[in-house]
Image (cartoon, rainbow, N blue to C red):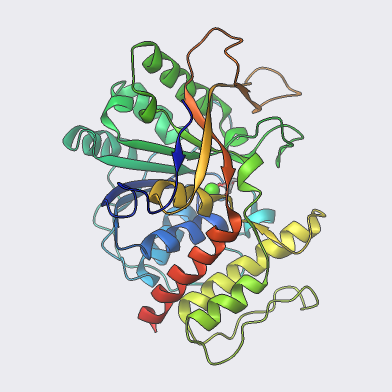
Length: 362
Ligand code: RIB
Ligand code: CA
């Protein structure tokens, strides 16, 4: 059964979304977090940090600094795994910068009361205490989710909605010619997660509880142009235009008067430069923002059911995700792969929400 969501449909924007986020903040993770902080109908219960774009301590520091910037300092930030399940951690400073947020800098965050609690234990306790209530969004390697499923196999039944950014289906990868970053960092975890959902489907798990998978084939349609920042600064009420241009000297820092506009401009500029270095143009694929809109029920999308598996043996295809849309493997669907989205509406939504949030921070 294909799932569809048209923002504003009954039971989407109006419902309170109680959200657990697992991310590897990163530039597009940071954009997604700022967006989710702008939504009154989303209650961010906790943010768990996974190593990926940068090491996990830096991920947690980025999460806490961003929450402080967005006036959500009380949201707990926790750490679970410090490396992938079975292979060494590989980070990508060339993509997101040495600290994971491009050229952006933020004051050191304050202390976090739950910092020493384990992210995986927190997920399991929260899901058991709120059966059928929690939405989870994962925009990182699936290490923590795999560990949680090992310890609590009932998790697919306990969670309300699961949104994952990861994978690429019959579409070129961004890490190897066939593999997407999140699944390539920890392919064993991704394989375990989809195997767990195959087993749950075989035991009768409702289709609506299968993960919604935002893979490169549709997240790369969310291709941000630098003019987005000019519009955001206007929406935020900045006096001066925010111009980020291909002709700028690399590393030019924003002078925006608004702290959120300045932070996002400095982060995204690095991302524009990265995409240009890899012949994709002076643009930025904001994968995780699309996943955030799916989790929040604010962006339109359509999906197709599929059985997903992940290559963990082949050197050539290591970390590659494969989707069986036709039941050729004789296994039940274990995910809903996004097949359609609306970037133009998505960027209009993002400007509006972030502009409103930015005005509150001034
Ligand atoms: O492949 C894109 C994904 O990898 C995004 O989540 C980005 O933040 C990186 O983690
Ligand atoms: Ca990410």
